[in-house]
Amino acid sequence: MRKYNKFLALVLCVSMALPFTGCSSAKDDGKDSSQGTSSEATGGNSKEDDKDKEYVREADVYDSLDYSSILELGDYSSIPLAKKDIESTTDTMIETNIERTDDFKKVKKSTVKTGNTVNIYYVGKMDGEAFAGGSCTKDTKPEGYDLKIGSGGFIDGFEDALIGKKTGKTYDIDVTFPESYPPNPDYAGKPAVFTVTINYIKKWPGLTDKFVKDNFKDFDKDYKNTAKDYTKFIRSNVVQDLAWNYVYTKSDVKEYPEDLLERVKTQYRTPIVYYLGKNNTTLDDYLAAQSMSSEDFEKNVETSAKSDLGKRLVFNAIAHKEGIGLDADAYKEVLNAYLKEYSVDDQDALDKLFDEYFGTKSEDIINNEILYTSVNEFLVERVKETA
Image 1 (cartoon, helix red, strand yellow):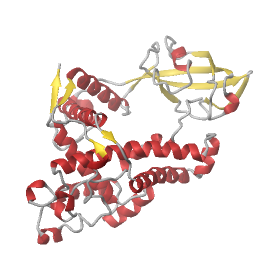
Image 2 (cartoon, rainbow, N blue to C red; image 1 turned 120 degrees about the horizontal axis):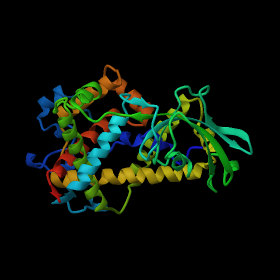
Image 3 (tube, rainbow, N blue to C red; image 1 turned 60 degrees about the vertical axis):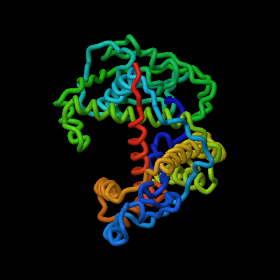
Image 4 (cartoon, rainbow, N blue to C red; image 1 turned 45 degrees about the horizontal axis):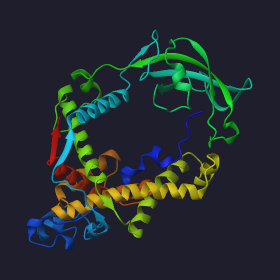
């Protein structure tokens, strides 16, 4: 009964793993940045490079290539951002992060409104008979199902029908499946009745120092564990994202190098296949269950891969143009964070995991993350907040 999610990769959030790096040396070293190497990226001499070999290796990255010739960069000399957009997005991000915690109360006497997250049980029936995949009951899922009203997660009409209803009550909701319903074409266009029990509404507290300490403690080493600093932290990330989006939308990628595109497509497929394998199914079986052809799947892979590759080409071009390079200390810091996160002892072990999870090496992801962060920091300096 949930809306059909056409592309599993969106659910898996695999784009975080797509590696693509840019130039390796800074302008002020007197060298042509387009001819740099990974060792030059450290900004040190050969002796200093030796001590960093365990961190900065000759990775299979694009640190010596400049792709600015296949795209047109948007003007980023000054980046105007409306304060109201920054504040609105910041508030939304904070609300979303708060709602991802378990620090909520169960409100069992209230009326459902748009924006509420309700916990429900439901049983869907057609012609008086329960149909497969249309139920969530106390027996099948004791914890119930959390649905945010207005999210559009369920078929049209379901969420709207819950608005104004009272918690603790059970209601029959009449809906009609869309004319096109790939998860089960047999349901397409058919009427159904859902018997819905509204268990409670989830209510989270506002952002306070105590909430931050209880839920977001040590969220960033440069900020204190206070509501004020957490808000500053989220706002800084919002400004960074909006600045990047401003530049990217004004840029025009004219060509997607085939070798790079194939690599990115591989990095989309790998985590999907891995995830499905862990759930004892294959990609072919999954596509068959979703009534999706392999051709359509590959089209979606290519569309998503081009979107991500385009972004990497743009920030790569900015890095080359501005002499923004890689840094050994930053590499070491990010690597250590990944080693801790994935509970492995060294980079070789991390490489094995990343190859299995994401279809790429860890240094590619690390270099990509460093360069992306550096370019964003550069762009933020050019932001002009407007009324």
